[in-house]
Image (cartoon, rainbow, N blue to C red; front, side, top):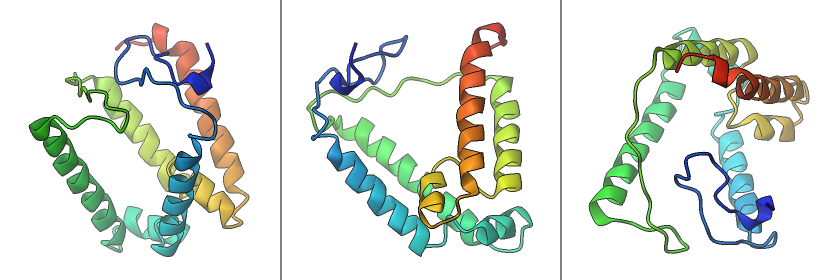
Length: 159
């Protein structure tokens, strides 16, 4: 199965588009990604110093950014559910109920420790590399390795 076909490849068949998109049609994602990268850089969201201020409780800036993102997400999900919004391809958006697992706490703590130590979370890694902070490549490779390792052992973990 070709990844460019954007077919449903996840094990549960949830929220995966069934419409085909060409490589050229995926250019829109690159453009949006570049735009967000520029916004992250200009807003100093990717700044190691801003992230360290947050974890040392010295500044509200990053908490405000994260809080605003959570508020936008909550409002967006509410609107999607209330008005039965569809994707740009006309497919129904299904938001599945989530179940709690104590592994989420461990994973969140591990994620937070990694974020505090490296000064980078997965979202802006590419923007940080794009600004010339090439040492972040180590963080990117570590994130990829950690994701691969989780995928390798996930069936052996209690969920």
